[in-house]
Amino acid sequence: MLGKDPILDIDFGALYRRQARASSFQARSAADWDRRAAPRSRREKGSDYARQFLARLDLAEVRTVLDIGCGSGNLALPLARRVRRVHALDFSPEMLRLLRANARAAGVRNITTHLRGWTDAWKGVPRADLVLCSRAMAVDDLRAALAKMTAYARRRCYLTLHVGPSFLSPDVYRVLRRPVIPRPNYIYAVNILYQMGYHARVDFLHTTGGLAYDSADQFVDGIRWRLGRLSRPEEKRLRTYYQSLPRGADGRTLYRHDFKWALLSWEKPAR
Image (cartoon, rainbow, N blue to C red; front, top):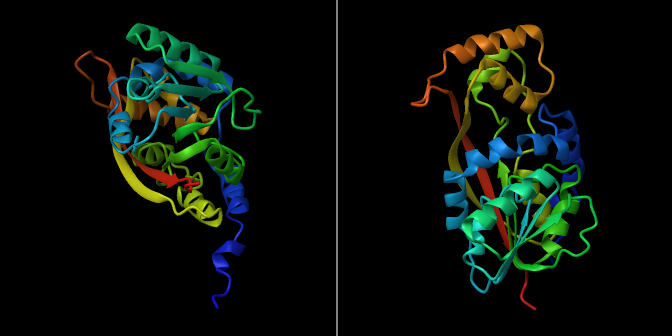
């Protein structure tokens, strides 16, 4: 007779919450994302990340998709061409406005938008064959979010989480001269899913991120978006660093760095 697995006694939810509170990277509000919606939408067009994510989806027997944290539609729009209906959920009104505009421009008519956040009641949001959450799991209670995501899925779920300590390049931290307190890594979700009875498959996506900037002020504001308040010496060093960055063909300054994402997937048991 097997004894109890000791990993079931570890409160990974509490460990996750402790690390998230201490992190240098804090969650952003809907208003924050409203302000970032337009540049984010432009950056996502033709995204290598989206191509890699979509290539790994199993759409067997999938007619409906729920895209949590859908943004301006980098996944919802191509999926809408492959399934009967996509339900796109986000807490940013501006992101959803851009998604609807992008859908109209593309002639896509089978996307239904839902203005909801993770902690809202999802009244009116239907269950779907496949539920995905792409880079949008910035939550206080990871276990509750994973349980909610799974409850809305009929067949399977997909989730991407950042791998590693930072959303910024090592060069920026060397310039700032400050320690990085990372957000909780993807392994918390793997362990919580295991405790919930799901053996998540883990794959990895390697992408290049970053933006083109028109000015040092814009670049510093982008770093501030990630880390919050910056000291005057930090801002001064960032402006000096900005001058060393390469320029693109359009004359804009390019800040690029690599990302690694963990893609978790799990199946609902057949009934």
